[in-house]
Length: 90
Image 1 (cartoon, rainbow, N blue to C red):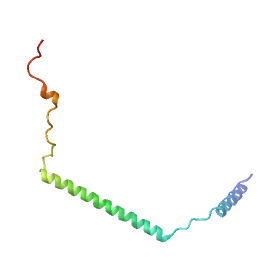
Image 2 (image 1 turned 30 degrees about the vertical axis):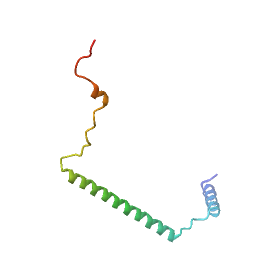
Image 3 (image 1 turned 90 degrees about the vertical axis):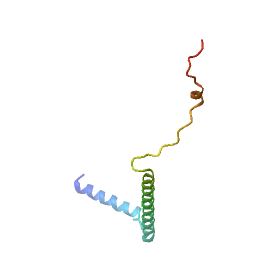
Image 4 (image 1 turned 30 degrees about the horizontal axis):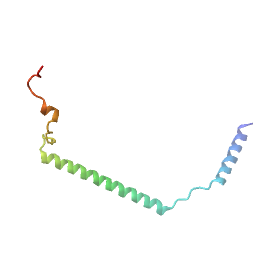
């Protein structure tokens, strides 16, 4: 089998494949609508990120530049409250 025979066989196979599977058709309106939806979603995401940063900056400004909000002190556990400082009796 020569090089030309392989080329002819490949060309025939490619032609057969194009006849079996038609090329895709694109709906321009659907593509345009999809792009618009994606762009709107990105804009909303960017707006949400800006809002989160602004809220975080407001929280830091409210507490001061070096201070960090700490939770209220927890009440001691019952086991720690019942321990006595005297040595146990024998």
